[in-house]
Length: 155
Image (tube, rainbow, N blue to C red; front, side, top):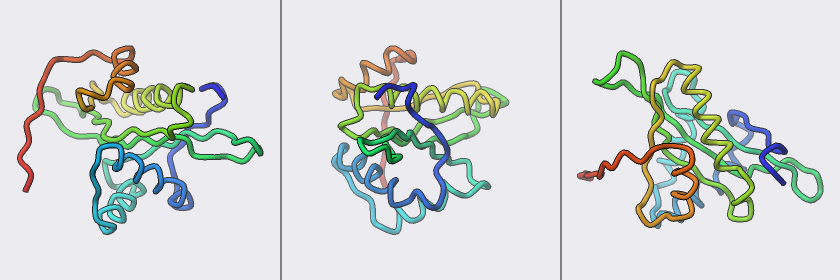
């Protein structure tokens, strides 16, 4: 399968059962977890048109021709002190291990770019771990690394 065989679309309520294993896979990749209530709130926010959070899914046909969710991306529009318009934060990107190298991640990032442009955002930005070499190889082709280091305090 190639990216030309993908269907990208916002997820709907009926897609939760397909979305949740990818969400859990993303969390496992980063060796973390969230309580089930947080997953419920996240899903609710992703589907709420009044929220600035969004989700897109990349679908492809499996061996039997059935549509299968291969990847997800969550993105959030937010204000900035540096521009009158919004920025777009690409918060989570995950593809099934067996779908990697098929253009799913690239297609999802480019779909976020399109949504951001359509919404009038002037920037799409995201984070990844320094050691995530596979993802960074793709990201280096699609965006610039500005050299910032993240600091955080968790409460």
